[in-house]
Length: 69
Image (cartoon, rainbow, N blue to C red; front, side, top):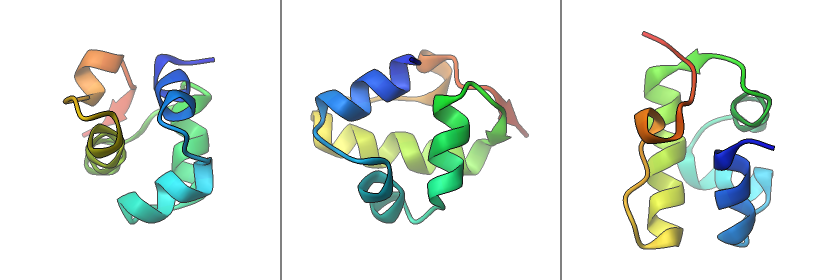
């Protein structure tokens, strides 16, 4: 499991909940958790939504999420 996935679970969020809060598809969250590349803007949205639940900043750079610019 990726660090992103661990943090999502620690935040008490399902994939669908996080996707809805971030305004992105469930498939994008699943790609991130499978260590597949996603568009940078979508990774940033996912991390911003996750940050709100963790009360700490989380960036795709810090988590090593693979992005397509």
